[in-house]
Length: 305
Image (cartoon, rainbow, N blue to C red):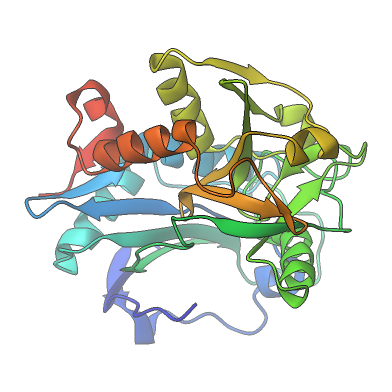
C-alpha cells in the first residue's frame, strides 16, 4: 500500500522532517525485530480531527514493551501531546493513520535486552481511507497457524510477531483471497493477520477468546460494547472451522480494517453472500462513533483542534 507520509515526524522528543529521521544500519531492531508499534486512526468530520480511543492505544503501546523489558522514557501524557501536536504541525484536515513506534537502537548482537537498552521513539502519519471493500471480502484459511503465547506474547504488538502474519497473507493472496484467517495450534479460529474476527449465528455474536492467541484488539473491544448495547448476546468462545463456515455472518475488526464483512471463506458463501444485518448495524454505528457523531461514545474521542 503506497502512502503519502506527512512532512513532519516526531523522533525522540523532537519534531523533524521525514528526510532527517534516520537510523544506522546497525540498529538492533532491524536485525532482531525488537520494535513495538501502534496504529491509531484520526477521522476528519469537516469540523475537527477526531482521534479514536487514543488513551487506550497509548496504554497498550506501553504495555507491549513491558513483555520484553523495552522501556518508554516518555509518559502517556507526553506521548499523547506529541500525537496531537504532530497532527497540528502537519495541519491535518483529512482522515489519516498514525503510526507511533519504539525500537532498540544500536546494541550490537546482544540478545540480553533490558530496561537500560537504548530505545528510540518515533511517530509519523499518512492519509488513509478504507483498507478493504466494505461490501465484503473473500478469505482463505491459512496453513500457517497463529503462534502460541507459550512461544512469544500474543498480547504484544511487537514487530517481529508479524512475520507470522506476513506468511499467512502471502499464502492467501497467492491463492486469490483478499485476506487470510489463521487457526490456533488446536485448530480453532484465532484471528486474521491484522484483525480480530467475529461470527454471528442466530443473532448471537461470537469472537475467539484471547486464549486462542488473538490480539486484545481495541476495535474488538469497541465492537463487543456496541453489540451488547444493541441488545445482542456476545460471547468469547472457541470457534471451529466448521462453525465459521456455517455462520450467518462473519466480519473482521481492526484499526485499519474497521468493520469489514467476510462474505466468502475458502470459496464457500457465508450466509446470504452479503453483509448481514448485525454486521451492517455495527458498521453504521461504528462509523458515526469514530466521526464523533454519537454522543453516547464521545469519551472514546479526542479532538485535535
